[in-house]
Length: 378
Image (cartoon, rainbow, N blue to C red; front, side):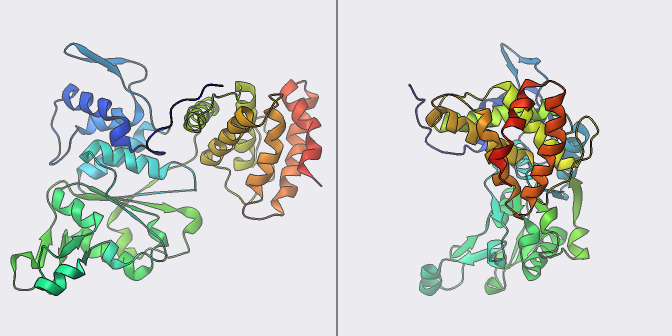
């Protein structure tokens, strides 16, 4: 079996992966741009949502822009307008709804980099949002701008770029408070440099900040009312259309299996059953209108991609008989048991309900899945 050459990076940043699209759109749309923006707001929306298969033409060049985010156009447009107004943008939603991916795409399109990022955790410090010090220079020369080590946020401020704070509600409240003055006053005070021109570092035109928050972590470190007022909130929900979700799962899992050096051997019938099961369990209702008991685990599109990837890798490296569908029940058990082992009983209930009824209606795929019920255990 031939394998594709190994990439030099597991994850390629959007500004590198889609560099040709960004360059093309910058030349294609020459309309007005907010200060510091690489693309017009209209071109940013096109970059994120694609050109619907249409080839855009500029001079002798033409290019169809790939759709990268599956969601409502109105949502993306509101996000772009928020950033154009230099207002903080907070993307909230359940885990696995592509909040981080959307923030990366927006940052890459607006300022050319998505790398000015702080990952929020319980261990995130205020220094990681503001600045630290090169202690060798600090001891040798004393406090100076040269000895100051800027955070990604400070780098974005001085460069008029977009900073990103992932999982902001996982940061401790005192760390979150550092964002309040930063977003309202648009400057950072450096007391150690008092009396010098660098005692206040001001944001350049174009600076703004995108944060993400997981609704499952809402109670970890609740945001203060003052910080909430500094953001425009946008909720990123699950993908509404079945076909669109199947297409996304196919594309992303195909790319992941290719990175593993293998051909993709998960057929459309398996993908449709996988995504349908995730949607049924996510919403608590089947596509036919039957009630389904929801597990406590979030059955997100990101999890569906992970399962499809696992099926693809196992088909390439482990399955001599190519029985991809036979591995699906075990993968689903692994997903639903993540938060609460008792959720396995809910998966059994789904099998005894929706899966059985589809099998009885004559679907070959669901008949096979019903026959695999013993793989779920008792």
